[in-house]
Image (cartoon, rainbow, N blue to C red):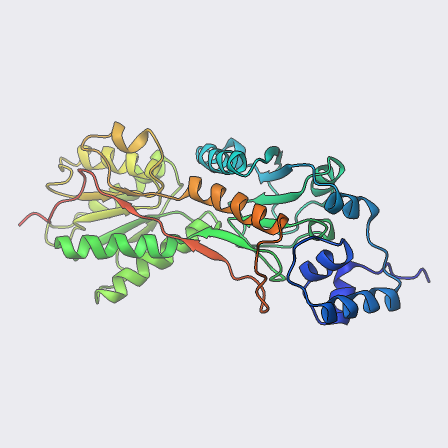
Length: 350
């Protein structure tokens, strides 16, 4: 039977340290805060297991290239990716780094493709950023531990790599809080069944807000496709069930701004005025939708630029040895999603 190849995770388990610490020790990463005793323990474990560090990875750490890689999972073709890339690019410039980008195909499983990471390593990048909008957690290949790495939009299932994520659940809950404070009690949610982190986070936030206000979180939820046609369909079902004005929702919170476009159309066809008869709120602040509608759409902004900038800043800190490792492993950092109030919210009609 062929002998199992020893990997960096085996060394980390034997030494009782993180994979990142093993990478720093065996690649002689400068300016780290690893103690001499820990370094000795890691090297002894590697020797006993017969582990040999990748020569290319060692070369990367001793001769920095000044380049970092951004591996995206189809986000480069989404409306939001430009802000992530802009934030990453400008932060890279501030740190005298060059940003290289590879746009990957959508993967329906959580495993990051090793060959795409290796493509960056072959180009001698100093660090790797992986960005996705389709997974809450991802499984990283061993290659990603050869250099400092950061995640955007998902957490590392093994808890080794720092990550940045939007707090969409809190953002959605804040919408309900605002509508309740404006006087609304019958607040509907035009949801979508697409199984992505945003779907789960926004629905949970809606339910959180409704429960906090003592309202039924299930009375006014309708699912449809996350496009304008779906928003139209969902809003027609929510507002036109033969209900009297006393039973009809007075506010519709849409899963995204594209659905909100359809909600505006449905309200108009039903003879309802926004916001006098029904308030409408979106999510994403996806230009130019909110300001193209009349009245302008109130919505929740996603911190795309800030996530891109945070990822590069954290990566630069790790590359330079300024990052203080968390002994318990890095927890995901959540960035707030603020409400952008415009003209589509008013108190319910009396």
